[in-house]
Image (spheres, helix red, strand yellow):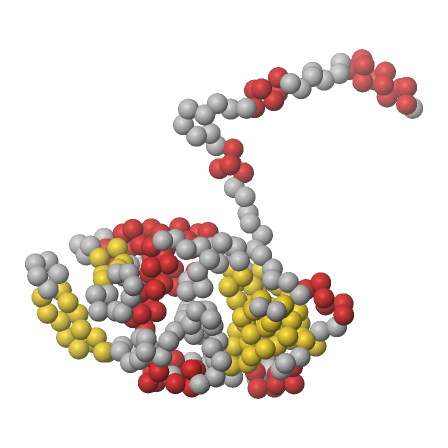
Amino acid sequence: MGFLHSSRSRGRVPDALKAACEVRFRGHEADGEGATLLHFEVPRFGDVAGGAFRQMQLWEDGPRPEQTAFELLGAALRDVEIKRVDSSRLDRGLLKRIGSYARILNRGLSRVALPDADLPHPARIDADIVRSAAALSAAIPPPQRVRIAGRLDLMGASEAVLKLEVRPGVIVAALWEGVRPIETLKEFFNRDVVIEGDGVFRPSGSLLRIDADAVGLASSQDEFFRQVPQAAVETDLIKAARLRPNERSVYPQILGSIPPGESDEAFVAAVEEIS
């Protein structure tokens, strides 16, 4: 998620990402009464994925070389805790994985914590985090087909990542899922292009990334698409109309202000008059 803005890698997983996710269990010990401390060995990103840091950062809020997978997980859990609806660390897949801990928490375990992760706030998975993850997942709009024009500013061959500058300072991230190998797209680099694919959104409705499968040179007619799409928000009309406790309905007042309808005789007379 930290490297791709996606919790699921499609196709062949780069060796560097495989190495960065290699977490080895080294043992356990008691930690006071009713707690167990598990020991893991996990590499720093700079040691196993150095190539990702020798080029321009793929994401402005991406991982740092000295971090590990535990720091990324802890930062994501913090976003879940505060219900950060515009987070770039979360998608539906990751939120569902966090929610799956409900099965463990229902069997006597109260929480899972990351005590040694280098984080500004303690990270944990407990019943509150699981509920927040479910709420954020439910708020994510479904993917929508989108078309966006901009300058192809960056290509990450090993991760199949594209970055499109829609306007100065406005960047859209895309994962390439087209039939053509990403290496064949080099003709579009640093040129105005238009890309199409499935837009994946955050709980806030803002665009997280595009799963792109088509690209071409942009024309003057594509200027309309030089903007970042927002998800169409589906309004729950029943929920919106539901009264809060002790709240009086306005519908009787509205209905009382509407004059009664015409009689059948008056309606027939009006129709005959205009016939």
